[in-house]
Image 1 (tube, rainbow, N blue to C red):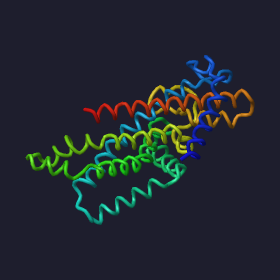
Image 2 (cartoon, helix red, strand yellow):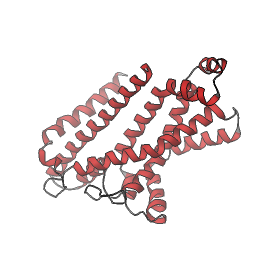
Image 3 (spheres, rainbow, N blue to C red):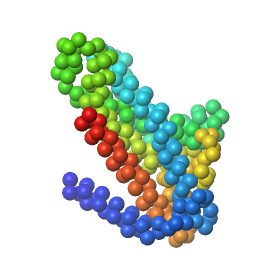
Length: 258
């Protein structure tokens, strides 16, 4: 525990110490240029990417987990096969998802390097994570809650919607938070699907880069100014992820009290 805490504190402290001094107004200019290497287009792209990927993956993940836990018969071979497949997909490297996204969304569907291609690729990547965490959250709800609801005459669907799901919300949001972190920190899959164009996307079929891709490309560019900008970008990315996590935790507490 102490080693983990020390490692986390060291990493965060290192990023803040090296990045905060380089957070200048030019870093948040409306347009990215060679002189200011603005992160604003990357911030906008990252938020859009997170939103679209979650809109796609969260409903599918939650509904799939509800079916597996609440409706599917226990010991069903199909259910076991789905769970094994989900666990396998969760362990596939992101570069493989990127190659799939490039072959299917970019090439086969003809979307090209675009935000929508990157978002769909990320939604497939985080779907197993959301399914597994939601499934475990639903399993953690005591059976007495279900039995009490059935005893009062509630139907299966009403029990799941009004009793089981609200009790499982903290666990479900924990999975969503992990998914957000993976989306925000993903680089390899997006370079094959969303591209690396440094501008604010005008539509979902435009190429753009996220903060993680932006930071990676800055570190690959020779020059101390680009390295300093990469540290500053890391600080911005850290703040966004922590902010989203804090917001999710706040929502979870409100829903749990409600």
